[in-house]
Length: 350
Image 1 (tube, one colour):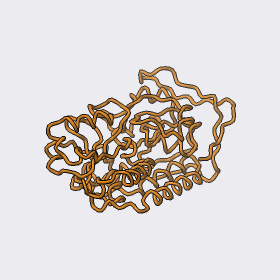
Image 2 (cartoon, helix red, strand yellow):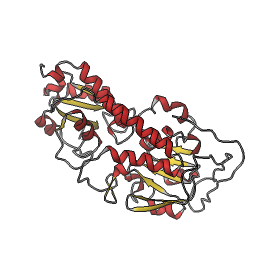
Image 3 (cartoon, one colour):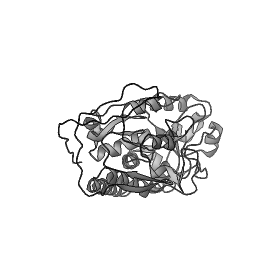
Image 4 (cartoon, helix red, strand yellow):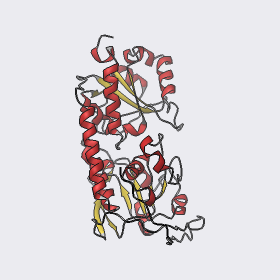
């Protein structure tokens, strides 16, 4: 992706934090970075049941999820980012250098005070839980009171309601929602050409990844985390999109929740032929990491009876590749590679 550089000068962006219990406001010494000159401000967009008005291209954006962060970095916007948070995996290698230039506020969700300490002028999130009044970073109303536009990914929204923030999907997620997020953010930051370039790259990689791939109805379970009551993929979220595109059938396709917690008895009863395992580089739940998942599956009295466990029919995906993010195409590429190399797991000879 093309990168653009800022000019060194002095500008002041200060947010008064009186009454918030936060430390002194951060002062920014960077001059406003120029975009492509195609977005007309103020820009008003509809975003998950709200209208957001952007007065100018953000210069100190904070992204509250890895998914959102990697879109912004892919658009070459690291100079306009003041912080990131909520990471499940290492950043994409191609974005590592850019990511080094952006402060990480927290590995998980930051507090409201930590967010304001970054002196943001725009906030984005992939998941609506961050905007919940209880248990989140801050509600969108509270952020609006401080003059902050708070953007939520369309992949987490249906009919104006956040899925991760308490709503329920009634129809399958499509990749068009992700492309809308890319185009929205590109317009907000005045880099629409970069947005179209990123979408075109993802479309081309998707087409290549799916060439000759058809798993002919193999049943699959996507296990994200937790050995006690595993979080598995429901029928309408991003993992089911991966399954549909590659010809597999999610054994929990009848569940509308994105990530329901189920019992292992249920998993054994459904007996999936393929297990997609989340390879998370964090330690939030038991079994976040791939090796811990495989060890559990092979040692547990119930799960070790599964044919998929006995035959090692495992596909390892990073957590970000099972989320609705630009990494969905990395997930497709890994499934394609597994299909070519897995032998009997695909042919049914095992």
